Length: 315
View (cartoon, one colour):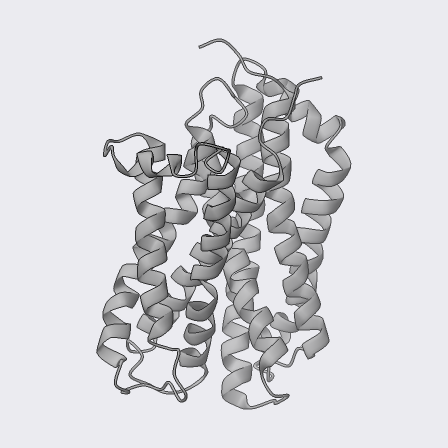
């Protein structure tokens, strides 16, 4: 029985960091694809929700990882500042600066939408567009980093996979889309406006593709783990026939991937194949987005715990 040194704070950091980064990258991408925010419509509204969501999960998650590293123990109140004193190519150094830059830029990006009536061509339009160009690579970088942080530990072969960063990136984008759609579904007025339906359809279709890609990447991650040496095969056994099997198949695969994908397919196919207007009930949309977020959390939980209970190997 191996002691779990990294617990819920680290898991929440990986989840919240990925969610915020994904929401920021998706928001900026939608804004830039809609003419850099030059055109009004629901695309601008989606970008606004993503911008308002993006910084806060990352801030909370970063606070949790700082707390977990012991910076708030007696006599070590400002120990985390040491991370800024050295600039090198280590994952911790790169991650520290990347997270800090993302938080600053995402707060400024959210500020451009935080006004009474944000719209294309308003007083903050130029700043918003400039920051959007920075948000895409920063969001992708932070989402990748959450996987690189674990993958940089060679003594933990289950984590030491080049596929882990890609898996966390795809999951981050999926949870980012889900967070945007969830916030939009909860706070928007009940309407079946054609423009709103079209943008929701495009976002839901994107999430469906991300889920499909995530399933493929999970398969590659498991196969890579099975083919490598060390304790990795034991980690695979943990997922496919051990302590985490139920969480993997029910909490992650079923609740987080299969069920949301099946529901989204039900509503996407009529529009995709028969050009019918896309209409998903608000309650269903909220439920699907919630399941995707649960799946994103379960993925991080399973990966973090599985990498520890299988034990390290010699370098």
